Amino acid sequence: MATPLPPPAGPDEDRGPALIAIGWTLTATALLTQFGRLYCRLRIRQLGWDDYLMFFTTLLDVAFTIVLTILALNGGARHAYYLLMRNPSVVPYVTKLEWILQPFLIIALGTGKASVGVLLLRFLTSQQRWQRWAVWFSIVSVNIVLVLAAILTFVQCNPPEKLWNLQVKGTCWSPDRQNNYAMFAAAYGATIDIVLVIIPLTVFQTLKLNRRKKIGLSMLFSLGILAGAFAYYKTSTIPGIAAEGDFTWNSYSPTVWTAVETWLVIVSGTVPTLKPLWDQMQGNTTSLPGSYYARKSGYSPENSQYRKKVALQDMHARQRSGSGFDSAVTSASQDRFLASETGGEGIRVDETYVVDVMDGGHNRV
Figure 1: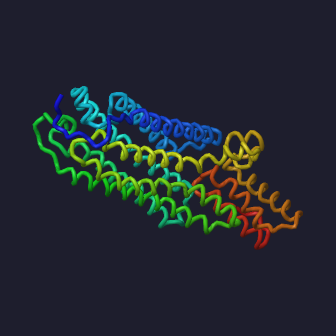
Figure 2: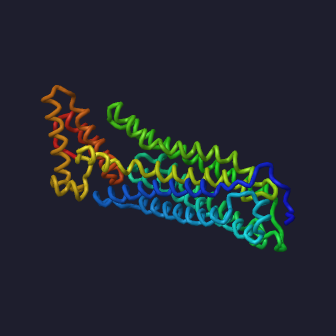
Figure 3: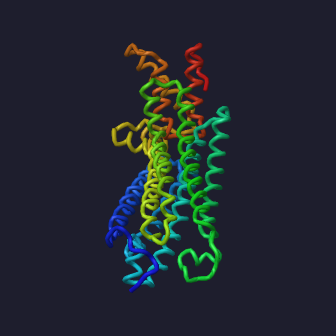
């Protein structure tokens, strides 16, 4: 059967199996991290909006992978020329699925970055004013940019059906206009990833922690830089979508890179919350200050006398071993830092207590 498209340079290759394998591998590992996150949060009774946003992000990723699988099984990762040769009626269907895929990951990127931002807000204090403003601006602005990208995906043609069915009468914007905004949105999202990495680093440098622990905390919150790097690279693959006629083939790389970027946002935004699980696996229960650790030791987040007792025990133990007091108390502070997440109070309490004890040994918090 003759087709209106020129034959591609390559053979009739089906990249569908590779697309399915990549999609489900990323989604499965993302789900594993969320099970770990849920386990940690339930053990310490600290479920918050950052968790709900990340769970929603993961659900969007699962929905994306399901639609991606349907698309790949119907030839959506082959050259459009060969699809038209063998089954012309399937081309509008798989092209429609290609367009439906995009909002899932676009919105998921926004909610994933919002989850990271809300996690940061949980420990930023009211004194860290510019950091809080920067986080809020990042959350709101990146979601506005990405929601607009999702909307523009379908309003670029009137009627929208013309996006996947060229036989429908109507008008569409120039593909360059849509691609330019998509590149802007991708670059802006990458910039926000970097900002959300820099902000906690400015906070960690002010904590009274030894260098090794500062580096450890910085590494936990720096994984988002990988998502930013992938997003910047993804912008270079977007212009290829505009190549005439072969949309099913040309959209493969941007789809894969967006899926990888979303996976990185989910994983990098979840790893810091898994520290209690890691500590428990290592046999260290002092970083589990929720219901589990309360049953073992009588701890509760409201029990300031407990915090004093732990700090004094750490101080006496360190004094008996000949080490400095400051590193002992700040060690206890750092161990509970990520697990408690009580709006920064855990950090402020321990730091104030250290100053009081060192100035005169007064038992104040």
